[in-house]
Image (cartoon, rainbow, N blue to C red):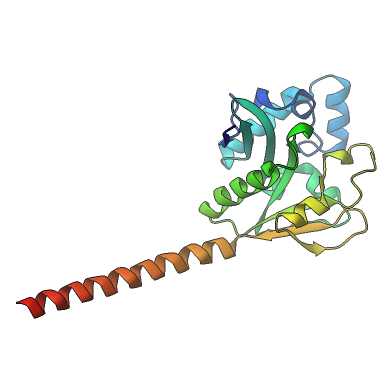
Amino acid sequence: MSRRVVGVTLDNLEQLPLRCRRCVYWELAPHLKEEAERYGETEVEKEAWVSAILLEWGSCGRIAYSGDVPVGFVLYAPPTAVPRAGAFPTAPPSADAVLLTAFHVLPEFRGGGLGRLLVQAVAKDLTRRGVRAIEAYGDAEPGEETEGHNCVVPAAFLRSVGFKTVRPHPRWPRLRLELRSGISWKEDVEAALEKLLGEVSITTAEASTTRA
């Protein structure tokens, strides 16, 4: 079955799992999160956060589909737009990085590369926008259901897709994926093509002169 990844918009936000649509772990400061949960306004707050990021900063998420079925998603934003970002013992995130926040793949679709596909989609988007790196807080013990922290991506998964630990911690390490290598690769390829095309042009010109 075909797989594709599209950007998160207000039109397709409702395709996130209901539990994720109602989760504002990253989007609100802890005391505001509790207040929103008390009054049943978390889904509204989630939509408001996505709307604000889209308007003020641009694309902030990707949804993966298997056929027509949404099977995973990821959200990301500048750390200054993520109230929870400063609450971890390994805070703050680097000023030159975008923070990967919510990340989820349906259990029945895990192990098939969709997580890596989502990370690659984020990296491609941010590289194109000139961002130097992606950072994320990892959960070193994801089997433990500490309240709230089940929203944190397993550190082992982050390492498996290229993230490196920049601030170690026994439970909440901060990890980083450099994007400059992708930009350098692109520049190297473009330089090689220019050189190749230049050599072809010179060879063609010399051949034409010889024939004349």
